[in-house]
Image (cartoon, rainbow, N blue to C red; front, side, top):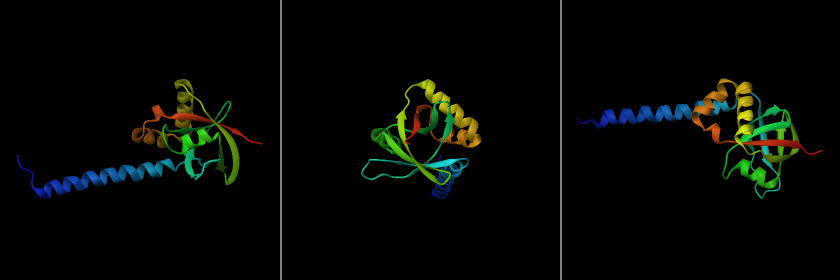
Length: 138
């Protein structure tokens, strides 16, 4: 069976539209709910990243990825500045290893952010995230 170049072009166009649509939806859903801005401190070129935050016994928690990026920079620096409700506050930041901690943070994110968290889970693997605990610096 031979596929004409016209059909192939349309198929590629549809696939591209689907991929771009999913990327756009991911960006939209990631901004629903409370979003804070985090900036690692003590690094040469700190970048600001928008992330979700949850409150659990023991403090506020974020969910970050492994490898190079904002989470690794913040953990290596040991502290970060966070803008929440328009106010900047400095925090110590701790990597909390283990599946139990990750599951607690993921459950809290799911409860707080609802469908947005579920959608993000379809596009990113939240089961490999690292929970990060924040402790305010007075």
